[in-house]
Length: 445
Ligand code: TRP
Image (tube, rainbow, N blue to C red):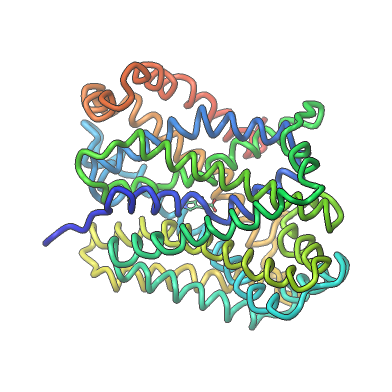
């Protein structure tokens, strides 16, 4: 059987497509608003650069050397205790769990693309009512668009690495970048732009509590798609002889610049036409549409384009969240690609229904435990526990378990003098940092 591999640019776009997602355009701006701007952004940037980039290289390396699904790659590469290490690969389950709410949110975005064509809320109050109406009482609209998102994602996965994953990224990623650049350039011309810059980059350290710190670190993982095996699974289909370091650099660079550009643009619009930096998950669904309303017909056009870009970002990430388990069932249980894709799709589609119901009046009471809804629990368990744990395991695996000679052979030609500092970082700094973050997120510290 001929093995399909990404082209070089195809791999970088697919990995960047995985990284650039709802995390960049939806979550990053609102948590930046929530945790006060500048200082938070700086912690996030430092984490991305120091921790994120290093683990990105490590995760790519495991996939690149292992060449299989996540479980088999760990098993294959571990020199001893193979049966134990293969459990590192079951992190891939986190992707399917994330998909339970990710697909629902992509559904909201589809709904907003359509409604923004002719309707925008006249003020924040009305926008809030509109959003809550959808969230809390419109089960069928949410189900319909969640199903649409399931169909697109599953169909792409059935087409495989080349005709499915590479292709959707080759089309949607450039489209996303064009839309965002266009809107960003427009925002440069507005008076409020310097205010947005100040909000995002002027660090007021007094606003940085330990919670903000931990959230910034956790987000760095989520936004770079690290710790779950998405990057690992894509890297298993990299061309032989690829420059892992360069690819990792491009993915980190694109992900970070798109988050910054989206943040600057959104805050400019909110300062110029809205009520300033809004907080909370409602930022792009509530405050932003109300700001677009002030722009007249241009606002409708911008709203549609913005939600399109957001949908593109979400879909390419969703594909990468599901693919690791698809690959797992293909490699370990000899499932056909179609069968594996449909089954994994049905999994998140089915549980996604409960994520919707956990916000709907009348059913949400039954899907609420310990202060969190089902929807929030999934978010918390994956982002706060599973991803940092996965990053920890990968750092230990590459830093201590894989033979140093193998790691060196694969990376030294590209890292050169930076190899030893990187290796040191991976062995000593990152495990400790990850451990502290995990304890903190779980509320132990
Ligand atoms: N990085 C994506 C975002 O920012 C989400 C994502 C895709 C992800 N694949 C992942 C998160 C793997 C963690 C692990 O929205």
